[in-house]
View 1 (cartoon, rainbow over the protein chains, first blue to last red):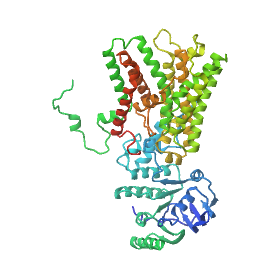
View 2: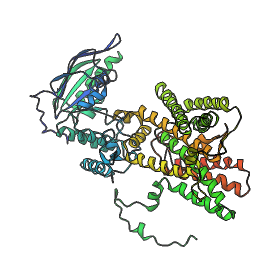
View 3: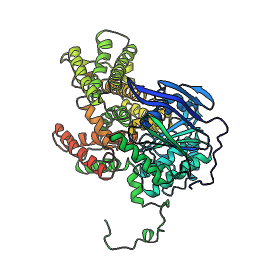
Length: 262
Length: 344
């Protein structure tokens, strides 16, 4: 699970790369000259305290806003997204805890929402319910979620962690190249957290790049191949897996927090 | 009779205790069928009135119940779609009078071709919905307010257009026969056929078309729906237009059936249509509901309305009864966890 034997191949082009990216809101500069790359099959943990600029970077990744300076590169090409839809179209999938799933809909309807499969019924394009149900069941079966009995089940019967896992699986199923996760394990139990981390591990094994954003070092540590520490809009450290202990990392976060208050 | 002796219940006693097993208590599965409670309610109400009065099954009663239920049901289909997508329309009752007034003024009073007049009138009712939808989605205000405003706008317009008079058409035209004429020698009138067709089409669309899927998603949770690429504003606007259109169409049927229209037509219909939907299991918070449930709800309302008259209760009293029933049904639904409490 911890993926100690996992080796990331960083010889080629990264899936996504920020080069000398800065961002300002009006006259207020919040991101300073950040370089950050995520390779295929790599989980990068972006860690920092509140106000460090994590969500600004995440919004830049997800296409909500272009940075005010610097370049974005996707699979070796310069890109500029003017909307999240454009980022999604190339395979950048953001999974937000409260924006991933429509609770009242059944599992298969959630899975295929916005990407429905149709069959022709005369002149009508009718939902191919059977096929979507089977495909959703197949994709989710690997997750080993015992509470899922059928794809017709409303998602509201599932726990927060299971919903996260389904959203991650969905992104994989539709060929995402880069997965953006914003505190995916916040407010989850230990067991639930393990399930979500397993889904992240599965996405990595599939060759997706994963950017895992969290303020809590210990959430990211079990699964991250690299940890990027963000402080006041600057990357202050990049740590490869195994270099540092949780306690040391936590000290780093706490130290930056103290500096913030000072 | 219910047997109260402690009979052995082998099915549950021997059921394997396997979490995640498919077997579920029958009662639980039945409770998941949203149309069941209003269905049982309808059967009970029909049984009650059949026993209380000799002429419940008379042709006159059948005519009255079926036409009242049909027009409420057609309005309620649109209201249900709109409610599933997370919005309300309080202007449907006024639209129910406005559209036939426009139609009748054009073809009864001014000699315009009746079909052309009908198309113009229905276009008017659809534009009412378009305005409702645009104002609600562009300015981001609650549809409750938008459509309450529209309610007063239309009430004023109706007043202006026929100022207390009645528009009557003694010789029903071809269009009127198509919308509200009698079906052969049966006690039933055209609205019930229209209602059946419209309800079947939307029941199908809701479960089998992308439009239905997106309607559920939009009302269920706008954020994720938008994130998954559903054009949620477009979905809402479409449903506003459909809702207003069907209110106008049902109003024209009512006019065609009773061969006249006053500005009082459709009074309370906005609330009756919402009540029918809620009795049928549609959530007030969006994201869930069924067309069949709303149709059953409409028949329940109509049966109670006509039945109370038959047993000698003053006709206007029935709304009191409906009010109490509505509140009880919503309490029951919240208790059963069908809607609301978790996301309110």
